[in-house]
Length: 50
Image (cartoon, rainbow, N blue to C red; front, top):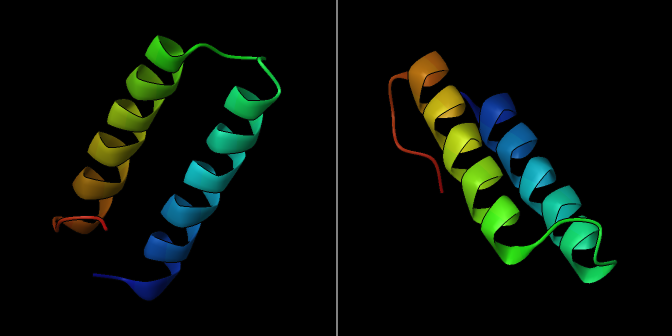
């Protein structure tokens, strides 16, 4: 896995958690966005993320 992509994915998870904590997104939205992020990062690196 490309190290930069893993860092970017982890950063996206951190931001999503903050949005969820602030009630700016629901748990369902969090899960859907994270699922799409995983697909995107997986597709770009052809490897598993976190």
